[in-house]
Image (cartoon, rainbow, N blue to C red; front, side, top):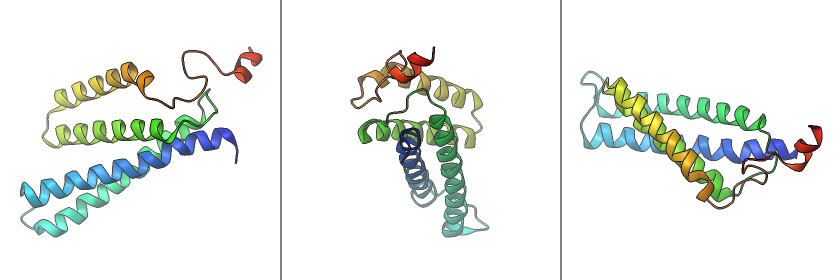
Length: 146
């Protein structure tokens, strides 16, 4: 399998899974524990409707991350630990932003996005297993092209 393809898949598959799992878990908490169900549908149908929305969000984010990482300068796949850290961070930021948007707090959603980006930019170098060549320099193959 092509290294660039493996690199993209190593980020996209965990993103798909963690966004769906965190989104569906939040949905279950919101509907069944906090009682935020549509009275006309009831808790079970509300959960199923919202779960479907989280499935769509997870698929879209998985595709976006795959295409984004497919076009990355870095071709070597990251460690699974690094890819999972990225996907958990993205899933948590996505769920927190969605909660803020559902509460009609657009300013809070914007702050969550800004803080999430800052946390990743500052903290990503501390996560072990970062792909080779992603420390502010291009891999050897890319340097030769310049």
